[in-house]
Length: 322
Length: 267
Image (cartoon, rainbow over all chains, first blue to last red; front, side, top):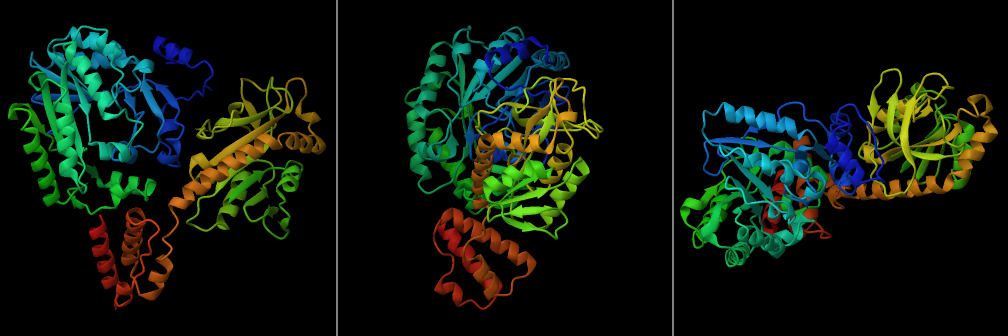
């Protein structure tokens, strides 16, 4: 792994960084005596190989119209620090882990495509990390897009909150790729989405991509219930749809805030002072979410508002756990 | 509280003087020097002693407090100049080959490096790594009661291929530690700051003791009370949870219900 060209290139980008060698990334990433919140102040970058389980099936209910859905993560942990994010509850460490063996991911994806009998397969990136936030270091889009370009049977979603779209703008738009941007209203972005580029900057990136022919998605996930949410979401939708050509969007999805119970408890230990987690929640099937009535209310409202801007065929409510 | 773990009296002397650790416990299991904010334990050489001293000191610490820990001492290295101070980023136990990685989250602009803990003094120093005899006992033991970011290790090169362990005297140890007080101090301040930040998040609500003392709470209800007061701190920071309305309640269950309703109105 140390000799991998990608490892060498990344190390060359940071000549003054201390390098610490380990046998397996889990030695650094997995120990219990770590505090995600403290580490988030100065996370390290761990370069590793992913040996197995590189491409996994998505949970039931997750998808944007395809029958065969998979997800993969070239990276663990995210540059951004969104307070609602499940990553802070799932991982003990806030260090970034970058799997440099992209070629093994390619092989696994090819294996799935081979077994799919010619049927389209969706591959989602951006589950354990932001797909583009560290693009200058990872070159993830730069290298995976040409791979997917030559596999028309595959469909590829890059989910992001980033404005690092240079790699995409320097390539021909892929007909089988969707670049999906996540949004919350300004009031939530300002208090909960630390280090994330502003809403308008993301919209500007989307406009550039749309102009260049890229298929775009909008992800309003998680929906956060708070006083004044109706006006907040109405304003957000207006801001987004007034600047994008909705007729050329691929999909729009939404889903309410929800977390597995164990993640919720971990996050509570990390952020006991966070008002988001001090609200009243319901628990069902091991998941913490808003009470059913609140979920129905906010989902219903946002769905109705979105349908003022897009046809129903573009809307995919997310009915699955984080 | 920050706990310094040091193997030898000669290493401890400059730290005791610098930090004014004048309160010495002479009849304790391990020599212990302290002031209000810092404790220094002299564990003796070897990883077993280091682990034992940490465990003993942990026994003196309140269970709900996360202290910072710092092992300071001399170490050997093949090529480092004598007196080089290093913040350790990897500790390997030579016997078991197990490794630990103290998170490097403090912005300190220090030389960093790896450390190998051996059972007998090393005079060959293979590889680009420091050699000591305590860290692999100290580190996992300290992590049992704290978080890795608050558990650190700082070593000062006392011997190398040009100047072996035979030349390491008590006088040299004291001098080398004394010359590294500035970076040690920076590390201590950084640990103290982070420890305060960490513990301030986990301090019980100011009204907790009063509420818990006024009514009879079952264990389960105590957990519920703690959670409600945690929510209170997040939703109404600085506001008292105690109120006239609560005072009128007759049972713990009524108190919990009342607090819950007040919180739901705030949320």
